[in-house]
Amino acid sequence: MSANDFDVVIVGGGHNGLVAACYLAKAGLKICILEKNESLGGATVSQKVFTDFDARLSRYSYLVSLLPDQIILDLGLDFEVLSRDVASFTPELVESENSGLLITTEPSEETEANFELLTGNLEEYAAWQSFYGELHQMAQAIAPTLLKPLPSRSELRAIVGQPIWNDIMEAPLGEAIERRFKSDLVRGIVLTDGLIGTFADAHDFAANRCFVYHLIGNGSGEWKVPRGGMGKLVAELTRLATELGVQIETNSQVIAIKNNSAGFEIETETGPTYQSKYVLANCAPQTLAKLAGTPMPESLDGSQVKINMLLKKLPRLKSGIDPKLAFAGTFHFDERYTDLQLAYAQSAAGYIPDLIPAEMYCHTLTDDSILSPELNAAGYQTLTMFVMHTPANLFDQNHDQVKTEIKSKVIHQLNKYLLDPIEDCLALASDGSLCIEVKSPQEIEKEIGLPRGNIFHKDLSFPFREDGEAASWGVETAIPNLFLCGAGAIRGGGVSGIPGHNAAAAVLERLKG
Image 1 (cartoon, rainbow, N blue to C red):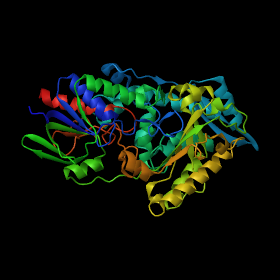
Image 2: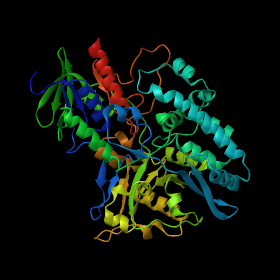
Image 3: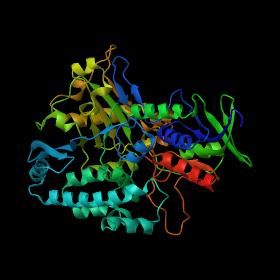
Image 4: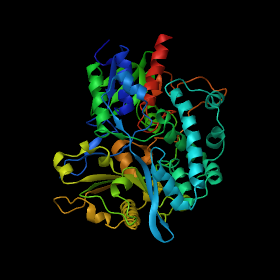
């Protein structure tokens, strides 16, 4: 075997490519990763966003739910995710008084009392407990299947064996939400899990598919904070891959993947050509289509603006809640059910929504290790905001103008709930600028290769194959021995490592014959 001849070449060095490389190298195969950028990680990076301050933010991906504990154990990774005591806080006016709904991660008297204060009775809390209790059972049934070949629809329905299957898999999500809940605010909190990264109406099955993946991680669906930031995962995977002898080539832009009788020839922009028996594509299916000369798949545009902030202090809230509680979990604002539906309709018609739904959280309240000791001592914090229903097409004509308008509107909306305007809390750079960074879908595509800013690479699929379809791992392509190992695979999306594991498993299965 020549120097540039490998068992498997992996195109793209994001976390899924690294996971696949580690599994395959542990099995004794000769592996090469070709990464176009100067460093590995893709969306799972920690970076010093504001150059005057020693704060390493999870710039793109920021929370972890879908990464199976089994992958961490299999690979022996020194990587920890931390639970948050608070699941969410949503500010709201109750009889003209500033209040809100605090939901703790575990059931609590505090959550029960907040539901009663917000809705006037405990019916909505009982509905919440019932719905999420059923979802927890569904998650516990589905999670163990994610690192196995795809079950069929009928097989997975039998495994779940709960009435909740019909609400989530067979009927539009909006129907279940409208039937089970009465409060506009509570309905909106539920719906957001079907819309993070997905531009959809509540009655579009795209929302169902997104909702499933937000609720099944490790059988609990709990979204956790990566200790040390998302870059810690990349650092650990890179360490292991290097120890296992994986050849890693950065600044190696792949320009073509050609298959022949001997396997594959992978051409790079800088000149070297690599040969392999198998190729794993840790890039978007759209990118792979260009490289392999196959038809371009269609998919929804990305639909979010990402905002990163460094604060010298947390803002106080008009509701009086301790900001260390309000921002510890997901802070929803203007995400009532009717807000989300109207914002979708307006964006779909080509307009910036009158009211832009958004949510955010503070990493440093759970894990302050991403800040230097000096910043911690001075009380600095981070905020990460995810702005909903702002699809890429809104930016196509007047990108900078639209970006400025959306930023201005969403900051104005946030300030309605704060005693301290967020601008007064932002850290100030040496040049006098505020420490706030805004990324449009187009900028996200340019920087980390997410087509039109779609954080899932393409439309999500349910975690099963249809009855009668051939058995698969959900990573196969039309070209034999070329597999997707990124977010665009079935059961891809999010920081999970699942498609990386499954692509490696598909290769090893082929080798065993």
